[in-house]
Amino acid sequence: MSPFSVFFLLILEISSMVDTKASSEKGSLLYPYGPHQGDETNPKHDDGTSEAIALSIPFTFYGKPYQTVFVNNNGVISFNEPVRQYTPDPFPLVDGHPFVAPYWADVDNVLGGDIFYRQTTDPVLLEDISQDITQYFPKNPFTATWALVATWDHVAYYGSTSEKGNTFQAVLTTDSKMFYIIFNYWDIQWTTGAASDGDAETGLGGTPAHAGFNSGDDTNFYNVPGSQTDAIINITSTSNVKVPGRWVFRVDDFQVTGVDPPRLNNDCWL
Image (cartoon, rainbow, N blue to C red):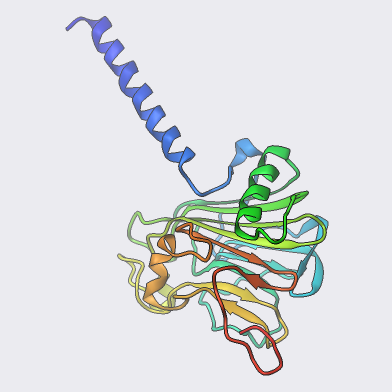
């Protein structure tokens, strides 16, 4: 085979690899993310966090507006204060911290992966988000004017001796009247860090990850089914909007489509 033929076949192989990668990304639940989207990147620091993010539009969560959030390495977006705790506790928390937990567990981005975030008013992205939410909540047509997109990209767990990584995303969005959060789970390979009694090789066991919402008032909260059990590993195949790996919530007055949580006598969400 001539050198030219070898070179030609090599180009074809690389082209095929690029096409496969593009197809995979196109089929992903995740909205676009990464430095090429203008994202900020969290420092490589175990139990680290972003700097304080001043929101260009206040975000209403369980009836209260917030102007500052932190994207925490351990799978949490918190309001007003960072959250560095790595082993999840059951909701409701007694410390009064309001936060969103797409996948609260002991992430160690020093060992692998990156955490990205950005605020955006990009019309193409906002149109995609608007169409998705209007599809899931058809009684409340929605046109997003702003979003915060936070993505944990193939992040490792503390104490890991494996190559396992989790990829998931949380999106906060609003039209200035209604406020929604989207959880997207693309690839979940581990549930627990070694300091939470997880197995260093498998990333399983111990106290598994928690997904849900804590309002900060000791009463209102929501747990995604499977939280803090071994079943949370299957969150890529569960949903409340009939799209495996996606959970969507209206959070200003808290509404969950497709799920009927029990209520207390005082009509508060459980």
